[in-house]
Image (cartoon, rainbow over all chains, first blue to last red; front, top):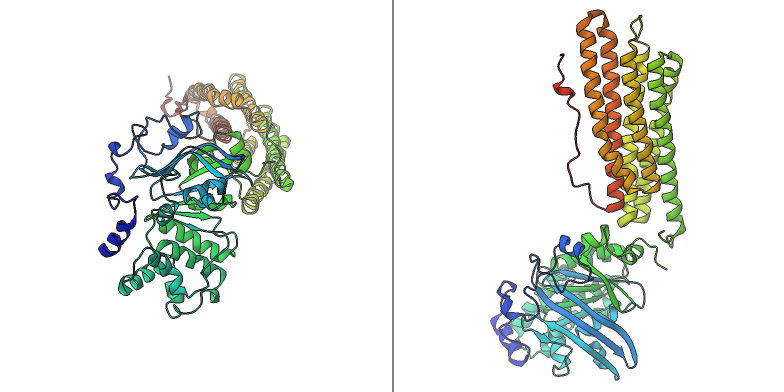
Amino acid sequence: MAALQNSLKAIDPLSRDRRGSPEDLTTEDVTVQDSVSIPTPEASAAMSDPVSHDQKAASGGPRRAEVKDLSFFYGDKQALWGVSLPIADRKVTALIGPSGCGKTTLLRCFNRMHDLYPGNRYEGEIRLYPEDVNIVSRDIDPMFVRLRIGMVFQKPNPFPKSVFENVASGLWVRGVRQKSIVSERVEWALQRAALWDEVKDRLRDSAYGLSGGQQQRLCIARALAPEPDMLLLDEPTSALDPVATARIEGLMMELASMVTIVIVTHNMQQAARVSDYTAFMYLGKIIEFGPTTTLFTTPNDPRTQDYITGRFG
Amino acid sequence: MMPEHTAKAFDVDLQELNKYVAEMGGLVEKALADAVDALVRLDTGLAAHAVAVDSTIDTLQREIEEKSILTIARRQPMAIDLREIVSALRVSNDLERIGDLAKNIAKRVAELTGDFHPQKLIRGVEHMSALVLAQLKQVLDAYTGRDLNKALAVWKGDQEVDAMCTSLFRELLTYMMEDPRNITFCIHLMFSAKNIERAGDHATNIAETVYYMIEGRPIADARPKGDTTKLAVGS
């Protein structure tokens, strides 16, 4: 593991001493508020802002990232309006909202997907901890952001290669060539993605030979192999049958203990099942954010309640 | 006024549930009023009628339970919808218990033979039952109207019912100590009074449920209690 970590650190300008555990996060590391903690349910209910900024009430875990007053423009068209959101470390944060509310737009800001198209513009910040770096800043090369933050898309999109090559590709891109390390890492990732038993005898077969659910788990394994800080999931199960969906949901909850997850989903029951925190978005703004249990049982904002009870529109 | 569900059938389900609970509430109110009336006037015919209606009340409770479970399975309700359905379940349980208490009161009417009918005691029972019937009516209004203030008023009003029950018990004890021939009648009256007081407690439970349904959290303070019948001794 040390060899892999050194290989990654060697080319990653974002790397500080980032193998420290979140418990190392002291208040000096963060310049924002007195604490980087997530609001308690009671504090969430008491606040008037949708997202805690002035919370002095501590308790709750440390943050892996924080969106701070982020606005996003597709050319002249503004899609996100001053979005602020904490992303809890090694927890699942869900983004829900009606079509066109900006949740996928927000998700794609995390790994700078929008940079692929000209005319897109960010204002505000997304800070990644513990380095406390603004990852949407022009000074940060998107490639290095994408080395740290992986993404899984709605439609499974394995590369037209073998199963093994798919999972190993993330490692090869980072310059990790030693066969033993790569093999070990591929097996580890496939185990974590609950796919190893099904593919261990056909690692050299084409990924296209797998079922939809298997392909999606392969994409998750591919994203996991380089040990990312965060995993972004854009409606990962909407193209899958209920059994595959249930397996991937179970997987998400296991994975959360080792990687921070942000998931966009249309399926509110899924958000209620798998996430620890949920943000409800509408028209490019965060309407309400809080612990999932609170948001789905006693939401503060009537628009949130209307949406989650199916009264919207 | 909350907007309708996009799936109109969901609104229909919830409205039906509300209707069943209102219907059950109406039946229970009448059953309790009839049972107490039968007791006061020693009307065995009315008492038999009050006993008979209990099976209808029980059937309604089963229907409410079934409908609630079906709605949860089909609609995956959230937030206020979920609380409404859970509240319907809880309220129907409390109403069913009040129905049983009314039936038990009515059953005792046949046992009250003899010439001993002390008006003072009977007035006492009437007064207490009037209080409880008013509580029940107000809490059912609170439920159908989603009225938080009415629910809170009922919740606090139980204290008065409890106090009445305690004083009635004391009086009954005096009568029993005065003349052992009074004991049978007084015991029946005592049980009936206790049943009426329990009906009042169930009305208070319904008030707590209505509060939870509207606010999304339970009533935090301890309910003021006035029932000290356990401590009542003859004076």
